[in-house]
Amino acid sequence: MMRRIIFLLAALVAPAAWAAGGGALPYSFEPDLSNKSSMQRGAKLYMNYCAGCHSLQYLRYSRMAEDLDIPEEVVEANLRFTGEKIQNHLTGVMPEASASWFGKQPPDLTLVTRWHKNGPSWVYSFLRTFYVDESTANGTNNLVLENTAMPHVLWPLQGYQALDEDHGESSGGHGGHGPAAPAFTQVREGSMSEQEYAQAVGDLVNFLTYAGEPARLHRAGLGIKVIAFLLIFALIAYLLKREYWRDVH
Ligand code: HEC
Image (cartoon, rainbow, N blue to C red; front, side, top):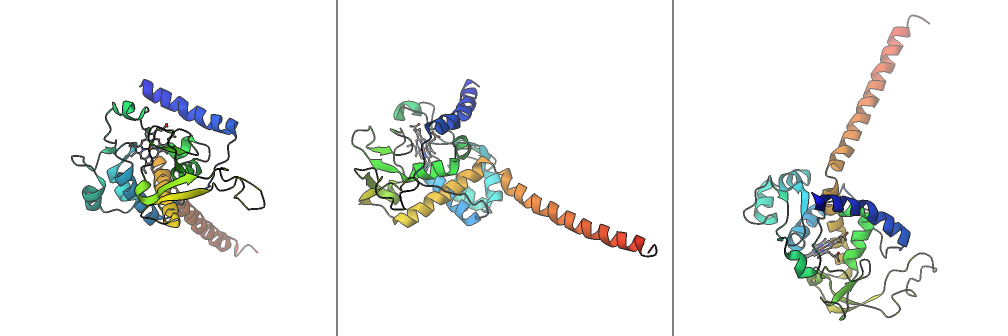
């Protein structure tokens, strides 16, 4: 209970702290919840690279399967850790003791795209800006969350990059407006090109945005139905009015 309260307080305070800091994010990302195949790919990446440490405790496998059109057998076979049932929430497999492994407990990610200001862009930037830094415990650092306890788990995809000396400030070249994209030098290749990696991270963020508010998918669909109903109703009302007044004029 106490943890929940702290979590809630943190959720309230974190955006304010960020706003006060006024830091601009290196990348911006607009989530697209109409792109199901992207969210499916994101779910798969999440299961392979994130679920070992993080949880999505408010999301059920079955709900995810239904919302994202993933056949339940596929979820059962691929996305799930052994011994779990499809009705279960994605609670993760890390024991409480994991805090001492990383110095910090990996947080639940259900609301991660909502508790930061520009949440989707924040997470997107976070996942793209790990860089090698020998002075940290795990050998990498992060531009968005300085000295983060999270290791660069997507390195097999992205490889490793080093942050350029000038922190990329002079590299923007967009007329000097806005934050420049950070300048990195690739020091070890991953399995993906930079573009493919950016897309993979976008898929992950789409999935996490969905996970933060699964009802949003349905809400959009409902809105369209309501508007269609109103339009049809307006037409009927209009025809009815014409019928009633025909003999009056
Ligand atoms: C080896 C364990 C581990 C894995 C695997 C892992 N993380 Fe993390 N993650 C952490 C830890 C520990 C933190 C806390 C970092 C901190 O506060 O410095 C964290 C923090 C985060 C945060 C920042 C949360 C916040 O608001 O402060 C995000 C976002 C995140 N992880 C996303 C991911 C995603 C997406 C994946 C999969 C690609 C992933 N993590 C895989 C350990 C992990």
